[in-house]
Length: 266
Image 1 (cartoon, rainbow, N blue to C red):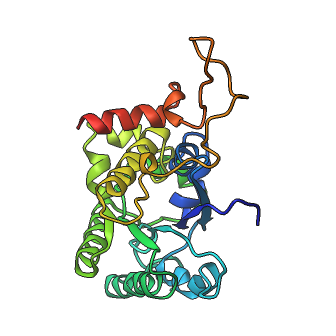
Image 2 (cartoon, rainbow, N blue to C red):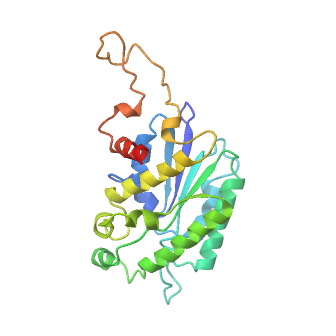
Image 3 (cartoon, rainbow, N blue to C red):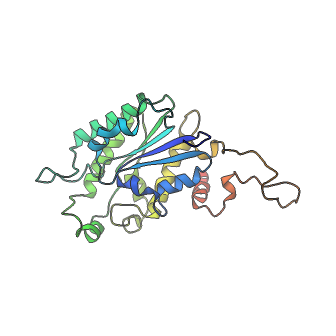
């Protein structure tokens, strides 16, 4: 491991997570925003459901790890919600089992790692069924994925989070607040466009800002690594002092910083 040691934020989930470091993805945006503050670690597995996640949980998050994550963001549910296939194959997980799987994942993350490990669950987002048929019908047999099923699994996830006092992001509702969500928010009907990823980042940051966690994991509250002033930084307009470039607010072209400016105004 390279040093100095930073906070670790682990993104754990299915393809919504695996693809989040793509162009304009929400994982990449978090890594950009938390530069010099936290390491964003990707543990995304396309096609996975909560059953598979539970099987590898202790391998991904070993109890005896020298460093435990400060934050784990978990997403499973979309694949679980797909209709069962007559062959018995496929990712479908019945709703009662999905709820218990997510309960076990939450319990393990909260009780087995560190007292300082925080957890956020992302609920199943909506989908564009027509676009799925157009984009993916030549790759898979009928995916059996419906918007209504996603809603049911999303609501179940959010209810579980309320019962267990876990922070959650309601992606089902957040994405549909945009009038043109069905056409603007997906690349293939399932996976997020940059516009949808911006919504995901904004909602995650809202949770982090409002949480009463100590220490705070909100980006503006975390110190920048090697954030001290230095005579080797670029000289400022006054010609006498330097500009400390550890401050992300100086990166005015950073779209995530602009998102946060909007968030502060709400």
